[in-house]
Amino acid sequence: MTTTTPDLSPFARWGRAMDRHRRPVLWFWLAAMVLLLPLLPFLPSRLRTGGFDDSTLPSSQAQASLRDDLEFPTNTAAVFFRITSGQEYVEPGARRLIGEAVARVSAVSGVRQVISPELNSRQVGRSGRTVYALVTLDTEAGSGGAQLVELERASSVVQRDGISVETLVVSADSFFRDLQDATTNDLQRAELVTLPIAALTLLLVFGSVVAASLPVIAGAATTVLGLGGILALSFPADMSVFTLNLSSMLALGLGTDYALFLVSRFREEMDRGATTSQAVERAVATAGRAVFFSAGMVLAGLAGLLSFRIAFLRSLGFAGLAAVAAAVLVSMTLLPALLAVLGPRIGSWRIWGRDANADGATNGFWARVAGLVLKRPWPVLFVSLVVLLGAAVPFLSARLSTPDARILPVDSVSRRAANLMAAEFD
Image (cartoon, rainbow, N blue to C red):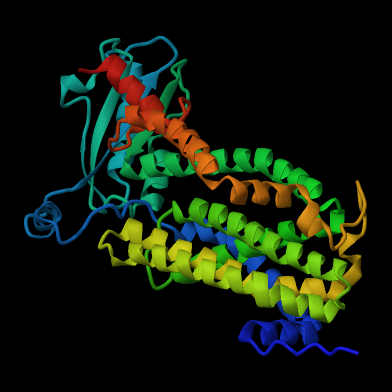
């Protein structure tokens, strides 16, 4: 009779602890999700636009001096009025409607000055049906989201006497709002496409609905926890609107990826005849250790963003750190507890094939791929480099520039206003 010496490594002991306390751990995570989910809808309102300036640069210091010492306005907005019912601005009825709207804009809190098209003929478009008012604001760019809503409400023109006027309010705040809306919509569409593909891939890899669902659960829990971390960080620090998308993508990807390591190793141990407790312990001691140190390297890389003086980059660093930390917590606590509860049922609801056996690790498809790489490393390296370099060739034609309205959808306010400006004004 042989005995197995217990693994005394910290990760093995952690795996045993998660197995023993699996039910309290699961209850803790359930409570955390119940508490966090109702708070996440408030996250967008806590995020800010802008934050691209370095306050130590001479240009930023000059701008601050103009604003603070000379009271020179550094934030402006433009309100476009486009007459859609056929009349021109020179007609009294149209001029009166637009003049009333300009007066309401002047009364909005934080508006310092409004230059009406009445005062400057260059603010009347070529067609005579489009004009704009130039608005100077007391607020800084990136901090006037509420003021933008007030400007939009004040400039709205109600149809009267057969005259219809469309209004567009554009500023730095409206540009960042449109950019955030566009990226959020694109991310949602991407998730609608990629998540079913990811779920199908997991089913093909594991062949079991239960096993395939664990990475999905881990990815979802990581995303919720990562966004909760951003919400908490938004109180002591300014967090950019772009952290929402970064954290979602990073948390979902890492949470799913790390879960694949642990679930695969757990199933291998179960197939070799280990008990559930032994399988959890060994999975955490091996795959869990790899996940922990891999995440440590990612954290170290993201921490470099915190050294920048630009608030936008720092907030991305904080968001990345929150997402990676959430992925580690989920992988080292929630996932081992779920594996301990499921045990042999990890292979339930099998949809194809049969359960893997202990020989699968040496006779499977991926084992053959690994054997090919070990047998012919140089040819594989050459082919891989050719593929990677071929994929990088299009970047040689890339042109880097500051983003403007052209990157936005054609139906966004900022893009429509930019097109209107190009068509109607010099």
